[in-house]
Length: 243
Length: 254
Image (cartoon, rainbow over all chains, first blue to last red; front, top):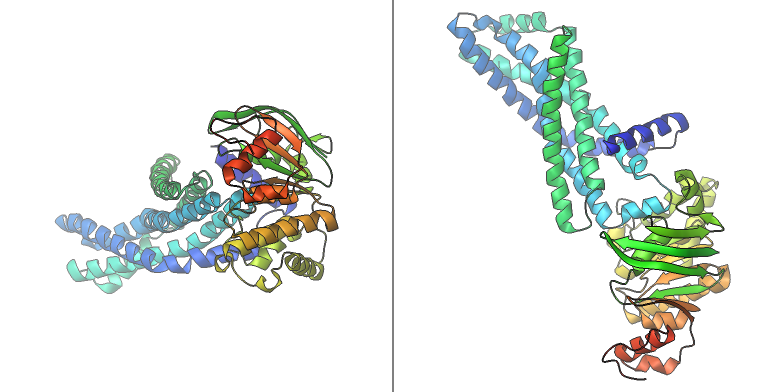
């Protein structure tokens, strides 16, 4: 919890006084975590969309309602699965990288060198990474959702006899703005949790090579647990609020 | 300039030294020596504010390093530079950027002046050609010199060096000693140096702070040059007697 507090304080200081990461630092981090993550995010979301379409379609076909496959895939991907799958991929790919980078810096006394200058490591190292991942996530989420819905089309048309035009029209009818902003909000939250888990474990790692490995593993596990907890918690809260 | 009073320092949950009281005088080179595990590097970390003491005070220009808030500590840190044992260069930045970051954050120089200061500081340590190199492309000795340049770039009045000669071959170690003497002579920099290298202690230090389990002793150095021809046991015995700690078991008499 103390680390979350430090990040909030550093963010407030940056907004008030401008003492924080430069645009170049954030852009560098975006370049590192965005484009490289896209292929595996798209693949995962495509497979998730296919999975939802087959499972949903099999159940709906029992009652002759396979025309509603599009609804299941669209709402499922947009509201929940695209963000969740993307968050999980980023936890393994980016969260671990953040932890490894910062833990290696700690082992090499680079963090001490910043502190001794009077530079806050949270401002200099954590905020650029957090901002980059939060800024990159909406694009990854949106493309992942699109690809997931498109792969649902493959199952609906190929396996359950739904026509292409019927699938597309049903998708557009099922898509609500509420589902879109909820899915986007959750995705951004997962991105923030991944960045925080990775940076936290990296900054608090020991000073040995073994500690770097442990920090990396712990960061991924922590990020996954936080994502699942956030997904469950937000679903309960939003449902209770009528969303 | 720097006063330490009743300092108790710990590492790994264990108190390694207590009751440390000494001062660092302006313009001197103070060597901190002692056997492994005596707390030399731990002491250095407390002197630069990277660790908080169990007891006691560290005062720089009369201000307590550990008593104020972060802003006060940051202001005090402008007075000194630190060269870490491993160099601790920021590996994602070039040599030039390693020096530019402190200038960009804490100096009022414009971009051109910052670039000039970087070049001049690297020239001082003999690394003027390394501007665009990354730390991974440097040898151990080169990394140490760039680290020293980074510690000097804000023109501090006090310099802390952690094992500056460790990992260096004798010619490079001697070159670094000569640089330390030059800094003291030309810039009037006060230097606190943690070291195992007896030759460096004898070559550059004005006073020596000897740490071991039994004693923490400050002594001025009057080193006979012939001592360097004798083995390490004899030299250690000499240093212990200089510190008034007495000979250890099995040590011969020089």
